[in-house]
Length: 144
Image (cartoon, rainbow, N blue to C red; front, side):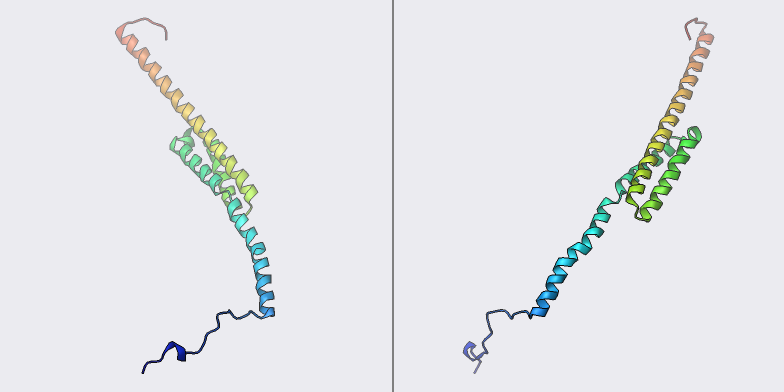
């Protein structure tokens, strides 16, 4: 004959009490754990990864605009500052990394602007030369 529920041992409905020394240990852990984790989380949040990505993007954009030819000094300063920002980030110096990344982005933007200006000036000169040659070929007098 199968056993019935009446023959099974009774299980207490009340949870076992935690001994007092265990409660104290758990309380200490519960109170100190957030204090230990908070600086780590705050440091992770304050790392200037966004600024560093913006600086890398600005340097790449300047390189794409031939800044190495037209604004080599500014591009070199941007690359140097970017390298220093990456080193500061690796050393967990968030404030230094942020400032250097912003400097790198500014230098790269300057190099991009100088390069674009030089390219447009050379294009303007080329077009003016074409116009002058066409006028001479056609024998048209006009203002340059």
